[in-house]
Length: 159
Figure 1 (cartoon, one colour):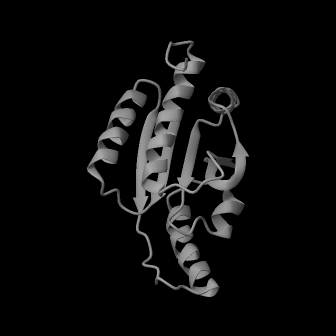
Figure 2 (tube, helix red, strand yellow):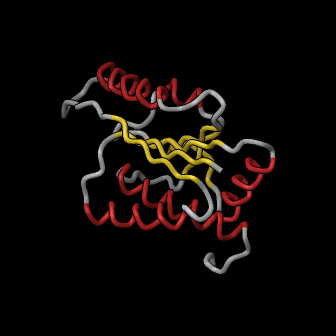
């Protein structure tokens, strides 16, 4: 399986980078992992609704430019479907079984994802009703994808 993690913004925090590198390395035994960071737009402190929409649209264009037409897209969004680790494992297993070997997880910037990215997504996934920094979400996502592969292989990790 080929998995892309497409995120807005550069990862700067060393402690997060170390965790992301560790899970990316671990996942290498199960899938080809590609992480793509697209540039974020600078948002004014008191942005209007129109400015926020424009920022999300620009970031969304950059995201969509990185996703191939035959890729199954899972957008991370607060309003998405909440799953257990086992349900995520089942989702990835079914995608692989039915020929969807290219999967992209998309994590938006501080304002979220554009309408165009959400329309392109085949499904949306929520890890919580809470808001998390997108850099931290990248680490959590990679850990859960790793956990999913371990679950699907019956390997002891998810207990």
